[in-house]
Structure formats: structure tokens, C-alpha cells
Amino acid sequence: MARDPSPATEERLRDADRSQSTILAAARDEFAEYGLGGARVDRIAERAGLNKRLIYYYFEDKEKLFQAVLEHAYRDIREQEMQLRLQDMDPATAVRRLIEFTWEYYLAHPEFMTLLNSANLHRARHLAESRRAKELNSPLIDTLAAVLERGRREGVFRGGVDPVQLYVSIAGLAYFYLSNSHTLSAIFGRDLLAPKARSERLSHMTDVILGYLLHD
Image 1: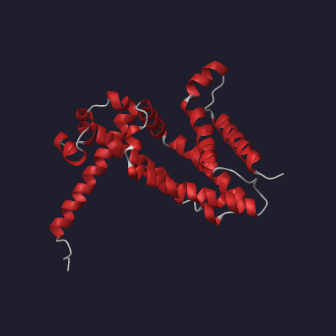
Image 2: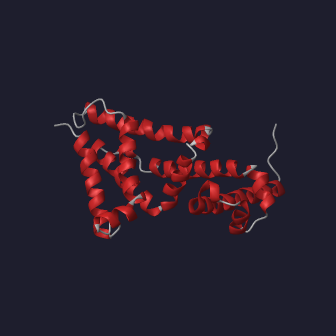
Image 3: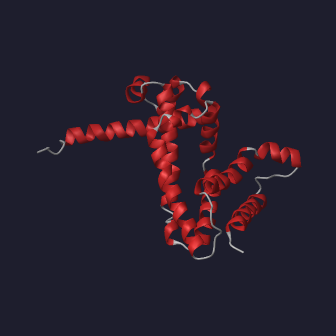
């Protein structure tokens, strides 16, 4: 029969969890600012206020640390999406709420988009090698598939909608606008991040997605 861990062991485990969380937060900021190529473990250690050897002890190298940061970033957004409880809403409201959440999350977490930019520069090999990242995405797609099917059965949504394609469209409408807001603002001579412009964008995204989904 396994014995309960001693108080000293529990404290060491808590210290380890705190250290890893601190390292991940510092690494997230470093990778978001400099990308994988420009990030430096020395600076991550300085940001974290921890010995560099601890980083190598917990994460082996910069590549593994970057993978862990991506996994943590995906876990955060997926956990918050699950808290929406979309399955408890009527189908149209659920999709509208997912659009709103995605938009608001990207606005509140610009580092998430810059991390994805860096990951794509490296052909997403860190995510491709991560079983954890793939597992994190499955619940959201399953939930969205259930919402779409319920909408179809109720005669609210059109049939034959791929939940992956739909989520990519929702994310893409938000991601492209925000990640290119400076160039788009310069080209069109409009501040696309002004409060009024952000509100108009969210309304437009909602109209586009629901206009596609809603049954005539």
C-alpha cells in the first residue's frame, strides 16, 4: 500500500511546480518577444529569477522548453473554452459565444498569436511531436461537432458542416485581423484597433459565421 508523501516531499513538489510555472511564464514572454530563434536561455533565467541549470533540469533544452510553452498556451485557451459550457446553450448562442470568446481571448493574449507565428516558422514540428497538444484540441472539436449536429437536428443550422473547418474560419477571422492590424491600418488609413473598429469587427465576424450556418 502506497504511503502518503511526507510534508517535506510535498513541499519539494510544490517548489518544483512553482519553479516550472515561473520558468514557463518567463519563457512565454521571451519566445513571444524574440521567437524561438532569437530567444536566449540566459534571458529566460534572468526573467524567471532562477538558475539557468534549473531550466535544463526541468526542460532539457530550448527546443523542449518551447514545446512546453506551446502546450501550456494551448491548455490555457482550451480550458477557458471548456468553461464556456457551449453544450448547455442553444446552438446559435453557442456559436456566437465561441466567436466572442475567441476574439476576446486573442485581444487579451497577443502573446498567443506571436507564439503561433514562431511555431509556424518552424513548420509546427514542436506541436506535431506533442501528443499532449493534439489531445487538448479534441474536446473542443467534439463539443463544436455536437453543437452543430444539435443545430442541424433542430432545423437551425445547415447540414454537412465540418467542425474543424468552422473553427479554423472563426480563429482565422480574428487572427488575421489582429496579427496584421498595424499593416492594415496603415494601408487603409483607419485605426483598426480603435474601440469602435474592434466592435464592428466582432459584429462582422458573427454575421459572417452565422450567415453561413443558419438554415434558410
